[in-house]
Image (cartoon, rainbow, N blue to C red; front, side, top):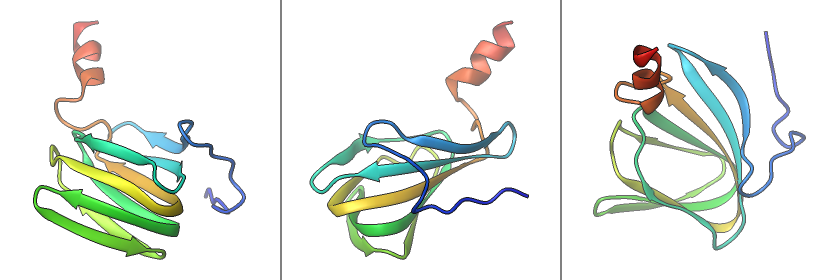
Length: 113
């Protein structure tokens, strides 16, 4: 078993902390997002679950937008373009599954070996 006291784990803006990464399963990442900062519009190959641990976020995908205050959860489908913006200082745990997802560049690199 592994466990994390999320308010005690060190994570800095632009330096996310990978808590766990298992090929074929998931990748779990702790992210600090100061008020006004954003993970600008992007997409990932995996299902993405964003758990808001503290603070408040505005999340959007397409024409949909929601404000999420901790504790809260958002799900983004694979390849769904989305943005996450901190309304106030926020800490979130991002779970990507399956890791790596179909089409992820790391899979192509492994196949080329």
